[in-house]
Length: 188
Image (cartoon, rainbow, N blue to C red; front, side):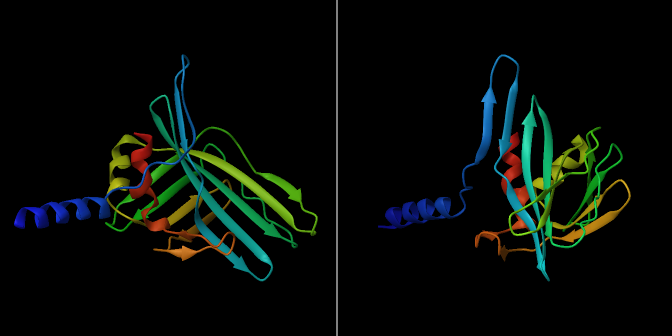
């Protein structure tokens, strides 16, 4: 009887703590090399007074080089300020353990694309690819992220990561604090 109880406890505890499988948008290995990128994940949403902004992240591995792709979507009927990424742009991640992880933008300038939808809203879509350095990569596996600072060409913006939120965009629940803990293993 004790054996059955111990076995049942082990089975249940292993299924409770099991990590969910990685979800890839692309996972290709061919004669040129290997490329994996996780599905986009909403890490920040701000909806206020007819203006909205969303930040999506995805992790990629290109021939052994881990990167973070950040896509920022802004929507407004008013003027949208253009913050550009350039070779000096960086992302700083403040971790719960007090450490700061710095990601460096690739050498490609990007100010985004402006699109007008059928409801009269201006939409700015901007993407940037940021590289991890080897010395700070490991910290993201164990400590939640509290704050993200993005240094643009002419401006700096801070985004506080929530433990959990339900997005107005799609009604799904997101956990941005633990995004890296849950997903960085997918690009190793």
